[in-house]
Image 1 (cartoon, rainbow, N blue to C red):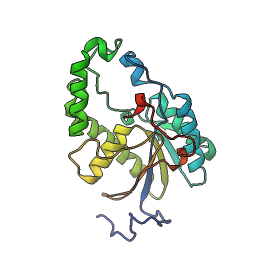
Image 2 (cartoon, rainbow, N blue to C red; image 1 turned 180 degrees about the vertical axis):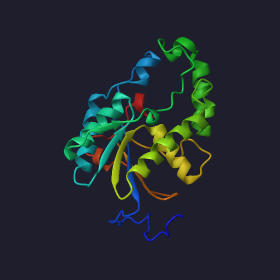
Image 3 (cartoon, helix red, strand yellow; image 1 turned 60 degrees about the vertical axis):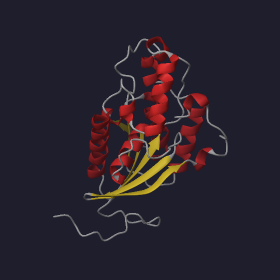
Image 4 (cartoon, rainbow, N blue to C red; image 1 turned 90 degrees about the vertical axis):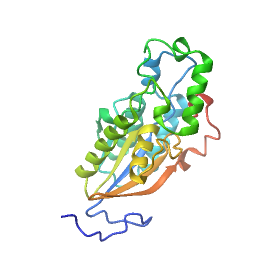
Length: 234
């Protein structure tokens, strides 16, 4: 039998996590991308110089919180962001493959760039449709949206069950954070919110209840970042 809720999970002033879990979903720092780079290289691109600075900033931002565990996907940009968070807490990073970003182009040759497989007009049409619908099924070469959301929800819910009464940080990806937000908000959209690099999105859980507390908090980078790199606008 589920317990009767005795706390307001959505409260900005909640300090007692007894019976609940608070998850800080942190998007990785900006990655290195280049025009028409091989898809395999783009899938696991490292942090850029700005991305390293962003990761250090979010690590400093979270250093004063009581964090019991740090998780990441197996992709290096998420791992390195997670390490920047874990370092000040003397924690090791636990990697979970199912926290990896959706691969929008997985059915195309991975040793070639997008423009080697699609002409510019076709690629532009796909991107425009995706931006308009905010759904991954607008991308015909992608991992299925239902499969992606299912694996993300399973992975994050498992973390929550493991850490009842604790706060944990999960360094992952924009699509992953949006997938879990869409699940919590019961949204038909796959990208209901914008999440900036190293932004913090806070979700709390108690039994089967989920509450989104905060989305896209990136105040820690605004002192040194004033615009988006066009290659990393998504």
